[in-house]
Structures are given as structure tokens and as C-alpha cells.
Image (cartoon, rainbow, N blue to C red; front, side):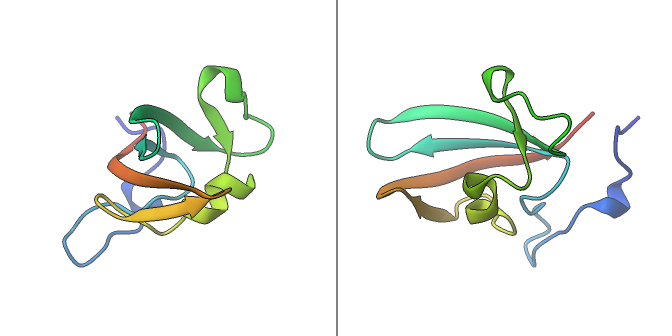
Length: 88
């Protein structure tokens, strides 16, 4: 069963989930070709060293509402969203 109900998530026109609270985001740093994975959580649950990023963090705010294949820039570095999934 889902940790968060599916009704809490937003979906785009291609039926892909959008980055938001409670999603797991896998992305690519286009400069270094390094993959990163973060789970977006509340400020109280955040633990960046273990991959839990606050939904209020500037980096999370930049990718909020985006979906698979979208790109964004943060601190002059381009990132591409590889996957967005629901927390199990």
C-alpha cells in the first residue's frame, strides 16, 4: 500500500506523475553525468545525507511540478528528470 494516497499526487497530460511532496525523484546532473535520487518530504523528515530532501529546499522548489524528461537549472548546473515515482 502507498505511504501517501495516490490522490495526493499530481499527474501531467502524459499520465506521468509530477514532482511534489512524497515523490521519489531520480535525476541526472548533465554536467557530471551523475545520477541522484531524492525523496521529497516535510522539513521535519528531511535528511539529505540519506536522500530525504525537504519539499521547501530551493533545489526541490526548482523541480516541483516537473515530470519525466523535463530539465531544469540550479546554480548554473542543468539537471534532467529521469523518473518520478510514488513512495511505497
